[in-house]
Length: 168
Image 1: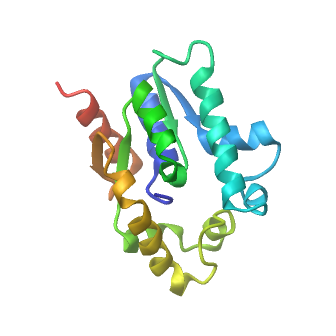
Image 2 (image 1 turned 60 degrees about the horizontal axis):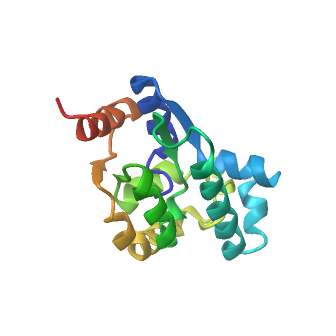
């Protein structure tokens, strides 16, 4: 879910594991030559098709399969069950879980709202919108092999993910 810390936790985890980090939104912007917000101007379905194409191109890259990579996708990638199937075929899906109120607190500043096309610009409506999105995606998020409480610093959450993925 947006605001859960996928990028910051993913970067931290990749550093801890000496792995490559890939932010799928950055890849989408490079592949399509424009911002996520601009892609959304063509509609969410258009953006989701771009997201799907970016994921597929990543998974087909020579050397990707079997590589030590941490990928941070957008929170809506779960909308397409084929994306989940593809992710599960090559790796482990991790869900960073946070309650809507916690997500709203992280996303309520104008800079965050400006780059997230699916969110309400009115901070008072933000928690309601996040609750709605979370409910719509909950079943897909529950397909994750690992669910981690993301109410902590990126380093603490990365440590939780690491312990879940690589128990001693």
